[in-house]
Amino acid sequence: MNATPEASILVVDDDDGGRYVKAHTLTRQGYTVSEAALGEAALEQIAASAPDMVLMDVWMPDGNGVELCRRIKTEHPQITVLQTSSALISAKDRALALEAGAHSYLIEPIEPDELVAVVRALLRMRHAEQALRQMNDDLEIKVIERTGELAEANRMLMSEQAGRREAESILWHTQKLEAIGKLTGGIAHDFNNLLTIVSGNIELLETVLGGEQIPLDRPRRLIHAALRAVQHGAQMTQQLLAFARQGMLHEQTIDLNTTIGGMTDFLRRTLGDGVSLEFIPAAGLWLSRIDRYSWRPRSSTWRSTRVTRCPRVATCASRRAMS
Image 1: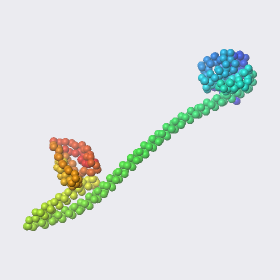
Image 2: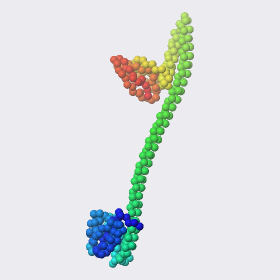
Image 3: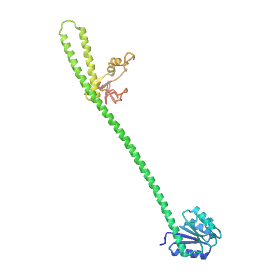
Image 4: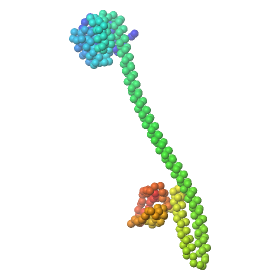
């Protein structure tokens, strides 16, 4: 197997001969090798430039190699540690080294082929761990990105559903108003036809009675009252047609006090005897130019209009109506 040029190895051994053999063997395999004779010197080199692997003798003049391994793994957990020893060779010694964080433990003297094989195996494990860690990091990033995309898609879906419900509500109200308008227009036309017949017959009767020479004051008063009722019915049909948006609108200058005051009798009959109604005309009220039949009874509040005032006449830019 070919060596990995990017791999760097620090050989730590107080024995010059043993350190040289290990460093020379690994250098021949293409690894970048540095050396340290003592533990403190090794820590300084690791702090300056952390290698991929530390090949370290357990017996050190300035400290215990097992404790040095534990310190390296605490401060630099990504570094692979391979410990060796020619004196501490018991199972207990090997177990202590592995417990301290060493990845493997070799008994000296070490055959060059064995050393190279173990180093390659440990570096392969290190590279696999790094690749797995990178894959996990990439996966977490993709999960975060996908979660954000799903959240945005859900937000857009909720917004679209809200807009669809609003459009359906508007369409439903529009269809409802259209149906009411058609019904109102049909009733107004039929009622207007009946009023035309009644009005024509009353006028004909008034013409016939007007040619008689006998006093007919009471019948004439009754006829005039019937004609006023017909006129009131005609006004109602005009209002219904205006509500159905089928009638012609005719602007005229009117006094609102007079117009509203003329509705008091109708309101009293509608409210009944249990309700007392009092009409108080507004003082100094200006005249308004509107269609007296264009109000539409939707609720009890008046829709505001923009009024352009002149010295004695107020012209409604949008006809005043009940909304």
